[in-house]
Length: 337
Image 1 (spheres, helix red, strand yellow):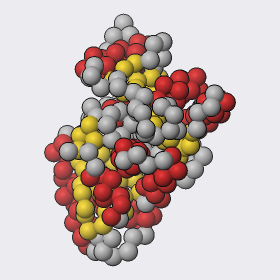
Image 2 (image 1 turned 90 degrees about the vertical axis):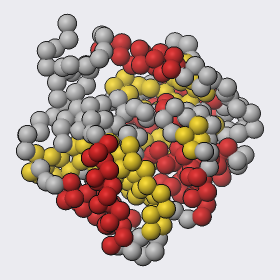
Image 3 (image 1 turned 180 degrees about the vertical axis):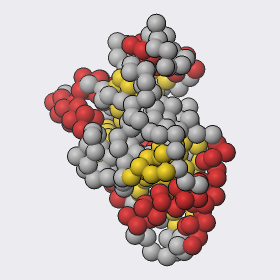
Image 4 (image 1 turned 135 degrees about the horizontal axis):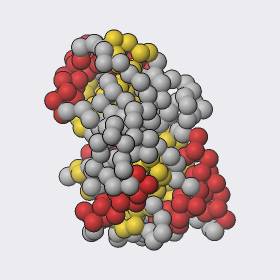
């Protein structure tokens, strides 16, 4: 029996990731394929010849991250760990080997200790098999320098922009060094900060992962419920947006007139209405700073199960990055035409 505190559309908590992956492939049989006896999804038409392969992975519970971005113009495959847990090194090795078509593989890693360690081990094993592999580590969370799962800044929603730009570069036929350069360019120019209105509830635990009062919010929260920078009384949307945006912009230190791409990302249980309210104030703040919005994304891109809250991402762009962000992509979670 499930604990009475938890109401979720699941069966056995131990089976939720396995059943989710089967459900994803059933929904997208012409796009996704699951490697036998793994929690790895890859492109159904892969490996793709004459193209650098892009791979990633991490704990489940952040959907549509990671496998939702597999497809033309983005990822070639992704490994899914258990909820909020890294995939094993063996799974990452299977992923790399299945996606390599002979032109090399770029591993895009969010900065969490388990992901980094297991991916590094997998890369060593893949290289022993003759696969050329490079990696980039995404650390866009400006809130805290070290957290429960990290040494250094966490990797959060800015990772999706790395997938998009590097995936577009790979689709153009660029070599591995060029694809990595573009990925690092995004990492160097992106910042994110989030807030939580409620805790999330993991299927295994069946109760909130942290205590947050009815009149409290957490600023700078991590996507696994890691503590943020401040727990404070609930405040209007404009004040939350100002706190998050100013922290990101102070970190990026952009010149007046700089063009940016913005992302207002829902954490899993936040209505679109509220995300657009945040975006309204975000765009006003950018104007007040003399910044120009090239594009604005609003939606659920990297969630935290059923957490109510949002994150704000700002990425400085130039002509190269604008071309790559505008390039076609066709994935379950993101389509650009």
